[in-house]
Image (cartoon, rainbow, N blue to C red; front, side, top):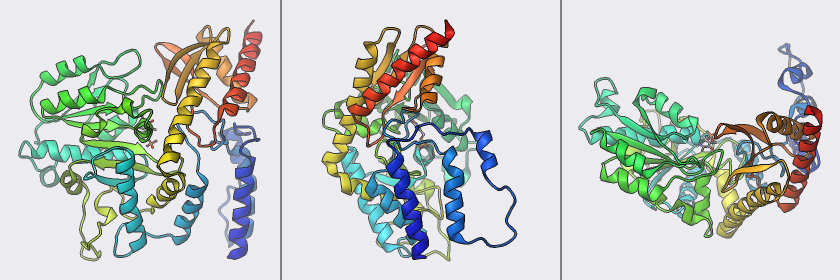
Length: 458
Ligand SMILES: *Cc1c(COP(=O)(O)O)cnc(C)c1O
């Protein structure tokens, strides 16, 4: 066992050390990499050391360096050293972290980490929390609590009677909400016809006046889904106005703050989230801006009882109901990974000041991207907010060619998107290692790509 784990540690260290220098893109595409593997199911055992060495060798050409300081695709984040090491221990201990009595240390770590998160993100200390697989399931968890509460207020117990025959719930969502909100609602029995899109401004933030109008149109159970951090522009909805208007109308406010909610951990960016703590539930990720390994999402609910009612289960064979809460009563998962452990390690290694520095530095890097790219002829900045930047070339074709060439070049990796009817290069800064040096190298790569793609289309 020791030799095998030492070998795994060696492979891992080599990979981490390669991150700053290797091409960011994967060498082979999905169809080509399949050929690297032996598709026949082995008939007989193979030595574990050999399995490991072959796995690393065969997978290598299809591994994109998502943990690179110059990976700017989507909102990915990397793995802080303490979080990665703690994640190894989480796998090693292999605890089924659903019941406190069975896994005492992990339940305790989850309790204290949940309390740290409420503090760090400026949420009510009395809110409940859940460590789930990602922001997608954090939405499911929090919106299940919302559904529970808004129907209970109408005298309907959805846990007992389900949705058939229940008062109709209306869900007000910004036109620029993330797709995972729709899917969470769909899983909860609230299909697209229950959704009312609310108009947004040019940065994608919900317009309070449009929300106020929509709130007037209907009586009855209402959930409002606001957003802190648009995936394209980084825009944050005006949360204080949204909470005020919604609560006046008796609606529940849920905030999708997958990455944007981390601005609350920085004294210099916190103001953007004014009013956030007044919401009723929140969903965010630890695997994005906090840089813990996948998968780790976080749900918080102000109404603990609604959360508990929506999620708890009991069975005679479980050991439940001790003095420490049982994690499985708060999550849709039953058997579950102790995913609070890497979060604990990340927060302990960074401290409050380290998280604030991480937020501030990545925002500053995004600002530097925008400022430096704006100086380039043929590049225009379409939007910049928090850790997000959108730029485009003179036309859509040139923009797409520029993005493709940057990806091919391998110095950095950015994706393309459509914003305001235009193709844009989308730059998302979310890796703990990224500095101005990476920004400047990437700006040069973008300039090279633009020259190259303009050259090829002439
Ligand atoms: C990434 C993201 C999600 C989904 O989060 P997962 O962790 O991928 O499930 C939801 N909303 C926003 C704004 C996001 O950026």
